[in-house]
Amino acid sequence: MDPVPRDMAVLTIGIVRQLTGLTLRQIRYYEELGLICPFRSNGEQRLYSINDVARLLRIKDMIDQEYTISQIKKILKPPTMPTEPTPQPTPSEHDLDDSNLLRGIRDQIHTRTDRSWSTTIIEGQLAQFYRNNRPK
DNA sequence: ATTCTGACA
DNA sequence: TGTCAGAA
Image (cartoon, rainbow, N blue to C red):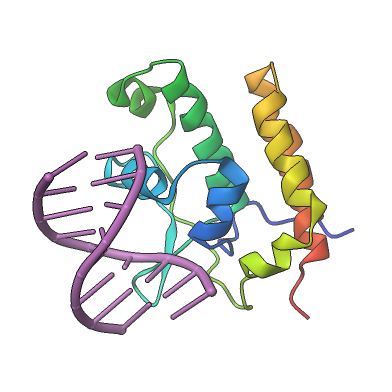
């Protein structure tokens, strides 16, 4: 299987919402705070990569652990601009409705006990998600 | 249908 | 943070 380019921005905010469990408001707000820097297609459409999702997951955990924004900024490396734009259509949320992958991922997010492992586990599933939703 | 920005009970 | 408006 071809490895999934972790830095390729192809996920819409709607999918990221489902993948991370964060609200659209939070995802956009964290960007305002400079915690995340998604690629912008058409100059306005936000597109996230697996790295972005993993980063958001880490931010979510730190917020839960009552870290301050400045502390998170200090710990997390400055967000790097995604190198790859979106050459292919992005999978829509409808494609995910039938997928049990999303449910599995969400369960992982809500049931894990060791937060440091979460991103690894989730990225693995995201890789599977990509293989199953590869644009024709 | 989905996402974007700005704004406010 | 939630949510609504108005536009793309």
